[in-house]
Amino acid sequence: MKKLLFLTVMAICPATQSFAQVQNETNNVQYTDSLSTDISADSTTEVLSPDTITPVEQSNTSNDNLLKFDEEDNNNDKKLDYNTDDEPVPELKKDPEKTQEPVRNNDELLYGNSETTTSNQILGRRGQQSELGEVQAHFNKVWSYRGYLNLSWNNTSIKPKEDIKTGFNDYNDGLVPDFKSNWAASLTLGRNYKLHKHPIGNVLQFYIDYTGIDLGINHFKMEDGIEGKVYNSGATWQPEGEKNSDSYKYLPWNVEKFEIAYGMNVGPSFTLAPFTHVNNRNWHFLKLNVYYHIGYSFSFLFLSGDDDADVASDMKSNVINWGHGLTHTFGVCLSYKRIGIGYEHHSYASLKYKSFDNDYGKDTYKFSKMSNRFYVSFRIGH
Image (tube, rainbow, N blue to C red; front, side, top):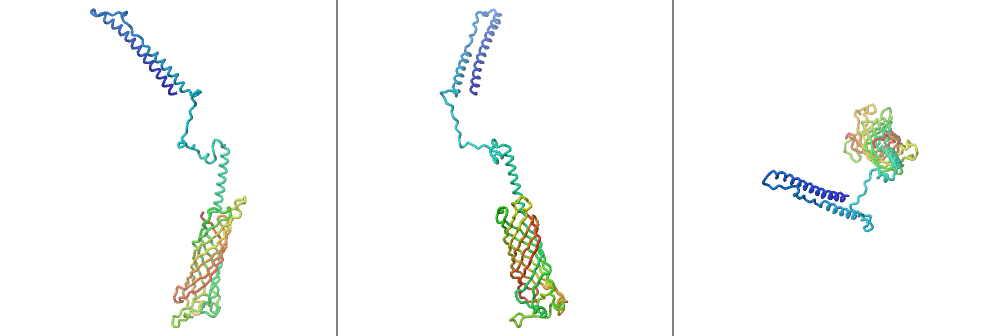
């Protein structure tokens, strides 16, 4: 097409030039005629008549040029005719390095070619994807709330692991008895950490638990004694094998006591959600957690001073003992969404007490401690 336009312009230009030449020649003739008139006015000048003027011959250049370009145009038309039998249509070769993949929009990438996928199929698949996302969000919520805050009511007992003398021989042969709490409470705060990313079949999940705060308080009432007497502050003792050593008072183990314990523990656990495959989604949140923790704890035992309980009526101050030991905890918890109820058995393999007051000696006393905890659990966090 560009060649045709070029040839047409080239054909018009020579014709325009020929027309300009003819026009110039005509003007020359007119100019010559007027010149003859002016010259006739001069008597000395030879007057030229119009008959003597030879007109300029018209050039045939324009016609020749038109014929020439017509022939060239016909030749070019023949060259551009690719439908002839003599010359086959050339094939266009593609450069594989410059070949680019067509750009696809998000719908094509997600649901296939938009030209072959109907709008109903796209809407249906989007609906399925939305439903799957809703189900996944639901189960993420089911398996969330991995933090826990437990408030428990305890039943605690402390037992001596060896014979410990009290200096008051009229009660229990002068030996420390077993102590049982009349009230006790504890608070534990911790978190579950996943051992695998997704629950097994949306039913079972394994964790490592870390309890950063295990705080408990226990109260032990005074022993019955003899006529309200449970202690003799006037009795003393000496360490065995040391004849010239100082004498020490007996610890008043039979008086009213308060114990405060703080510890941390860690251990494995698993959570079972047995109803995640039922149609009612509310049942999905019902879970059972079983755990075993091992930790270390510190215990502070306050022995209340009571002159009325002292035979010598000379006990005027409290006595503080402190101890420490390895702990073991086994428990189960049944929870629904953010709240649960549970039971755990918390025990010390060996709890060693020693007095802060040197008046009672430097000996260490071994006890075992056991607590049965019934608690309410609040699930927190994500």
